[in-house]
Amino acid sequence: KWPRLSEKTLKPMLAARPFVLVSALGSLEWLHENGFRSFSQWWDESYDLEPDHYVRIEKVYKVLEDINQLSTSDCVSMLHDMQDVLEHNQQHLQTYSKNMLNSLAIK
Image (cartoon, rainbow, N blue to C red; front, side):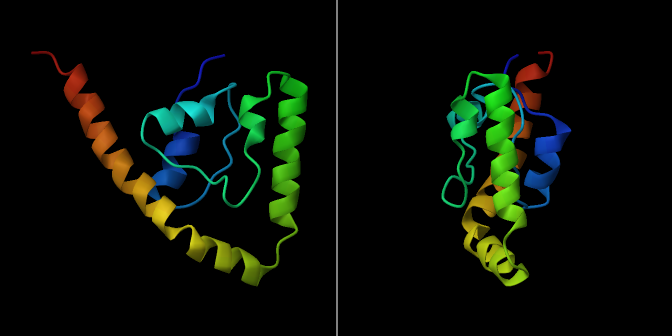
């Protein structure tokens, strides 16, 4: 019901890999508000703002179908083009997690 980070999002970020976030309404928006970047330059992320769960899942499925239709060379090229976003998320996650742990520490 609420946007949040899970290991399913954290693992690709740590590995500097792209992800399609299948989660609660506004989850990508929440990531953006917290300094992370996503992949709207490469695929349609309008699913994040779709309030109807069934329509949102259909939109996610369409994104995955589109990615699946890409050739290997297109995937390699896209991954190369994404490097700035992937490295940003990887580095930002490390800073973000340290800040979260520091804010939770008992003083």
